[in-house]
Image 1 (cartoon, helix red, strand yellow):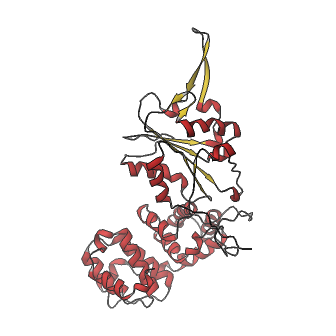
Image 2 (tube, one colour):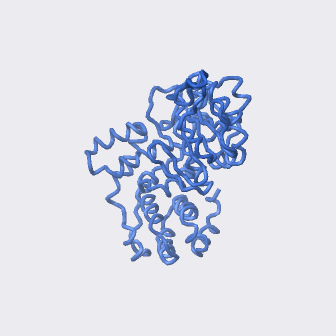
Image 3 (tube, rainbow, N blue to C red):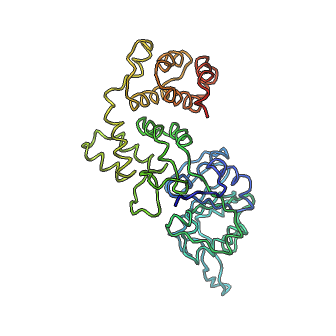
Length: 368
């Protein structure tokens, strides 16, 4: 029987906006399947806040906020706060962990990662932080934001929501990024050309098991499957490292490594892209003679060439020249990949380019 997900969902960008808007008073818990980018929300909020965010060990130094990451399943009571004897007053005093940096008065952005995988006792302790912006008995600085992440209960990875907690937080069901959303991120984060090309040609790898008619999808996470290797936005990014360093090991070693990250089906599919690399025309050679260089027949070759061009085009002249080559490609669907990625990755160059505008007007049916 097909699963159809009728629950309203937000994108990762919508989730960041909501948390930024209400997170100082309402704790949002992001719920989604594994590997879709929930944990990246912390750095995304820093970017949205204009902070100079960087990760140094387990610390997140910044300008406006302290960014604090809590790995909920591995923390116990002494990691958060503890009652310490005061021998002078013969009483117990509650000491909050230095994790929260409460000595500097700066507002915090606190992410409780894997919130519903925490032990039950710890979930109760976190509840006061969610509800009252208090750690132990110590209030967080005014303006502090608290949010959490966890997985769908149907994912079968050990998430349990306490009933009294559910009524105190805002549950945000987060959608899995589409291949276009992931490609926008990948273009900015040094993901290999081959990996991006594969993603562009395999949107099915970004479907969710909660979508209808995905029982035979060989790429994605399925709770019913014993296979723990699958394509997710996270694992696909990790596969890029294997691709970039493929000259360091044998072809078999590369396939085994890819299978160990994205699963056997995706690894075999990606191997087809790797096999045609020697047929790629160099970006510089296309620019020299865009109207006469041979247009490759293989789709995998063309798509990789287009992503190389997207990475390199910086001027109107270069774009005009490369568009002469793109216009010779027989498949408008492949041309549309170039148009879409240029508009989203290089808008400063692409937005006012007459050749791109003409292509869009002539091929609007592919822009849906």
